Length: 379
Ligand SMILES: *[C@@H]1O[C@H](CO)[C@@H](O)[C@H](O)[C@H]1NC(C)=O
Ligand SMILES: *[C@@H]1O[C@H](CO)[C@@H](O)[C@H](O)[C@H]1NC(C)=O
Ligand SMILES: *[C@@H]1O[C@H](CO)[C@@H](O)[C@H](O)[C@H]1NC(C)=O
Image (cartoon, rainbow, N blue to C red):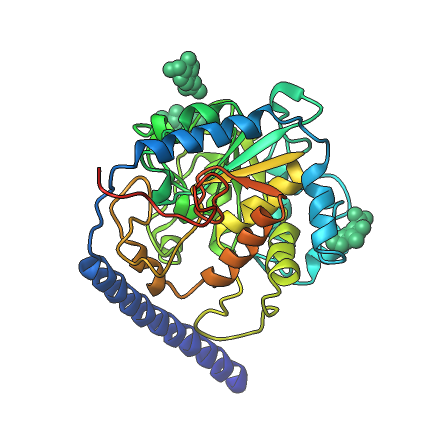
């Protein structure tokens, strides 16, 4: 009996100790975030050379007018990444069928290992996780993934972007107020909890909300969203910035991204090292949501374009996003992603013609010198 008591007390002490440790960890993070926030310089968005705009528009028109080739993106990915790209992968997690065994291999974001109960609870609450919406239900769908890059500013690609069958947007990238540059149509918004837009204006009743689940609390968050409930204060501690929970979404708009697409992007295509148990810190093996969304688009669509991509870390004083005035240099400070490897991958996809880059930040097919080009000079 006594020994049992002792063990229980010990267990309790461990728990308390762990929580204290966690609290200290959170405080350190907070300080770090404040520091990064304070020393971030601002970079003003510059005007773009009218000729550059004209060339970008002409290029977008050429892409639009070319014939749509069914399954083109998938076939090309299969050609480029033989045995590293699975043409048969589903885009979203489905209910009511035996989950594919490879989903058990890794934990989030690469799989659902140890999280099946949470997953099933969520799937039970989702009314429709079968087929994705088929906008226009065309046989050959063209999709565009909109990155958040400052390079979109002033290019006025909104009109061209609206012509795509499926417009995929990432995290909290704003539409409202930036329609001229990024269009006003959103078919899919793909995000992790911290990235979900705060403004109700960014939610549309006919667009899909695709969630990427990275950690335990992300499952709790999705549950709260589905039930229109609020998370407990304790659970909130585990997010690295505040999250919105009461989202103006109906259950049938919500999808869970198939984690095998994250795994394919990270471990197979980018060949990042497989996840290992590490106690603190990051592996740098999690791709950015932009890279994941581009690979998703090759599974989901026949032809794929992208815009707003291309972080050029050699130009730290260029604007990072089209919707704020952070500088490119801010990207150097994040510990999660290996952006230069991703940039190379995306450049390869554009050079090989698998995807078209409408804003030319990765590989510019409409710039006079046929090279990568940033935002043009002051006008
Ligand atoms: C499960 O996934 C693997 C690899 O991702 C794939 O090769 C296999 O066909 C899938 N099995 C089923 C039953 O979908
Ligand atoms: C986008 O803008 C056009 C023209 O201003 C408008 O007709 C259309 O309804 C808008 N679409 C959305 C989804 O807001
Ligand atoms: C969610 O709850 C809020 C009040 O807390 C309510 O105003 C809103 O209509 C609810 N949303 C849905 C979709 O039920």
